[in-house]
Length: 69
Image 1 (cartoon, rainbow, N blue to C red):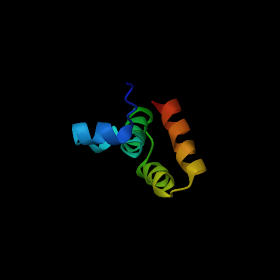
Image 2 (image 1 turned 120 degrees about the horizontal axis):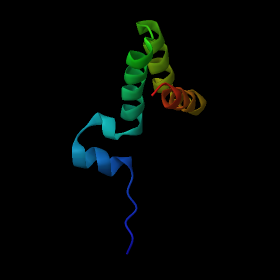
Image 3 (image 1 turned 60 degrees about the vertical axis):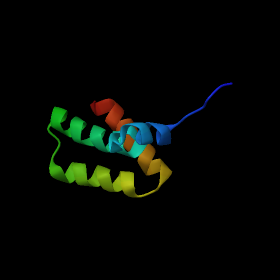
């Protein structure tokens, strides 16, 4: 038997928002901003992109987080 688990299991086991993809990217936005001196407006724009529900915007945030972190 093979168990295939995803982010839901991680969230349930840890109780932490960062265990979700959205939570991980949200944390990455903040971390990337602190590492590179991005301003609060940049953070707000990336958070809005993440929360937009648009897959392309969310993937764009993931790409930026990858580069900044």
